[in-house]
Image 1: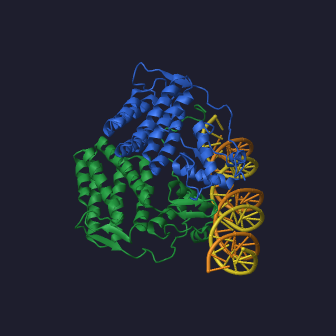
Image 2 (image 1 turned 90 degrees about the vertical axis):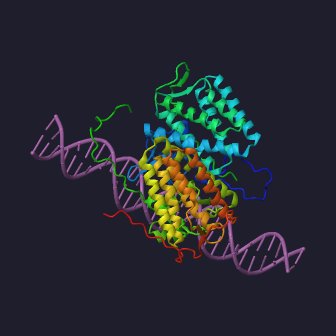
Image 3 (image 1 turned 120 degrees about the horizontal axis):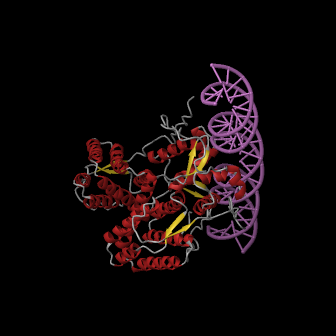
Length: 256
Length: 256
DNA sequence: ACATGTATGATCGTCGACAATAAGACAATA
DNA sequence: TATTGTCTTATTGTCGACGATCATACATGT
């Protein structure tokens, strides 16, 4: 996760090219496994099992796991090992509050800078979301949804906020898995997305923040099952998303 | 997995007391060492050295170190091991923007709940800060300063924001070490603290946020050496804060 | 003298193995 | 029959050791 984002530095040839460490790769793989649902929430992590599937030993796996523990995606109880973090109702409110904190300030940073390119990029993400929501693939819609918010934070250009959001995005997927039944996404694109982009265009941070907060409030209500708003269509994916019990691709290793 | 096992215990009289894991202790010790200045910024981490000082082997130390890597307090370059993260000018802006993001939303959460006990507790922290700033111990003043902000975030009651701030607090200390000359704190308590508490009492989130942002802006200017405001007294601590090259208390271990 | 190639030394990254702990099964007793 | 104590077993937590990699110092050639 060290060098995420627009990968290749264009012309800086002499500046240190950080080769991704092995723990970086394992940590990214674990995050992806949680995001995909390959590692079910609450399930214990068999260290030898996962390590052998990744083609590495236990030590690098444990080191990478400690990163996820720090993120809050894994919980480590002394004698019983590691488990994928679970979500309760109160955790849900906490999670979305944190998302509001991060994205709200991202909005403020973008407005402060006032670069039209940022708004254009976010507009582009919205277009992708609209296009994805035309289809019926709930997974693709969810990805595009998170992609919009991820791009919003990325455009703020703050490393720390970006890192926070990286884990929050995975947590959102966890919430979508463990809450309610199945994986549910809204079929129609909420108008608040349009409001956010419009407010960014008008450089009205407060309006964008209000729209964002309403979006999060609706998300909480939806996940709690209290679909407060009537007349909206939901799309449900019932399958556990990966029939493979565990599909972890072995670490690519350093190709030399 | 649904409703398996015996019925839920009626009253959980003794709920699980999580004994702190060894990596928890080591990670806390490392954080404290960075916060104290025992581990200078930019200095490499000799693993065998630190491990022997802590009385543990390299494996738990490395696992704990990966947590700090995730936090951003340590950097891990593949062949060269671990180093304490360093701060540049641009990192400074990033850092304080993240702090604004966290604390700003903490203010909003506190105002939203509107519990007078929160404001009272924060008022108490301010009193401690004022009392500390009476003396000449710059370290104590800095601690009280960070304690005020920590309490502000803690009173918001959001686990994630609290965790974010825990690392941001250490980063603030790092910034105080690596920036400018020596360890500098303002001798007089900035009036913005009073403004924050007053705005919280009046449940005026926007005013509190404005005060907070001005505080952060001043902090950045101060660390950059451009003391934009005239007529304020600074107090400097020149000593590297710990003459001991490395004073890491050995891990307390599980007392049996 | 400067640059380059080589040798050396130390440190890191990874692995397998041992000891400690916790969960589950089974039998014994009230 | 329910409870309790013990045993077995699997998994974790920790350690020492080996191979790989990088930094430094030195010698050599232009």
